[in-house]
Image 1 (cartoon, helix red, strand yellow):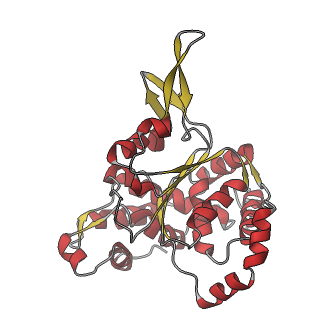
Image 2 (cartoon, one colour):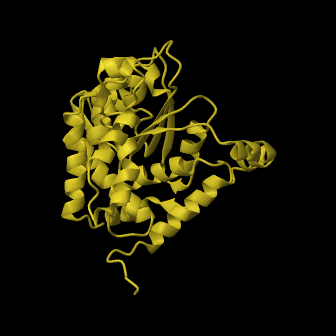
Image 3 (cartoon, rainbow, N blue to C red):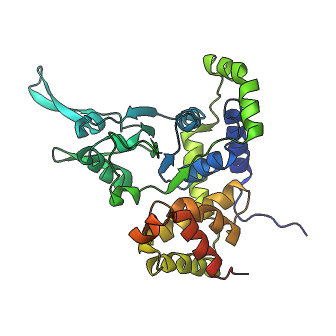
Length: 322
């Protein structure tokens, strides 16, 4: 029997496929990374990208922005960066003798923040309102962000000198934390073989824009229409609740984590051409949604336990709805 989707996802799925093809001109492997970036884009979320230098974190984020006909800005975070360097500042107009607000680089659509953990707490705090409420309050005035608006932050997991731990409140504002690992042997060989070809593609700026702002907003609205049954909602709630009383965890997931799992699962179902969520969608997004929101107890952290291991324990302890 053939079943027709209640939500027309043909154009959305085709656009996602074309974006993957464009990124594939330069990026070797990293399929899961690209999938999660697309999910976050459609779920209206921000992404924290963690990985050692040289695994294409920044270039992938930049190329994703190029496939969308929208604004893009890049901010390099440094220890001496001030909030006004990100948000903007009021300057005196000598002609009118009035102060005018000059917008900073955060006022764009897709904002790439390189080495986001290098800026001090004062600058990090400037991002709280921007990321959650998509607006900035400066000198008594409120300035809304454009639509779409997405923050992509990269950080290095091993370098500690000159870095600052991100506040928990800021981490919670990221939909995903994506860990980008090394390529496997076959991918590494392919990277070496195609190095010159890929550099030629970059030099020619051969990445074609696929999505317009209007299409992206339309696709986001379709994601909200994806059907999620009550038993799947109960599955999400049970998983998140278990993080709050797990013996290995000092801090569990908040209701924001439950909402993040639900929205991300809807987007994941959409890019796979389904207008309904299945348990496998939940499992796919559970790890990137939770790994930066839960905190291990000091004892378990010293023993080498990781957030992903605890999430796996919790996933295996909850019965999958059928």
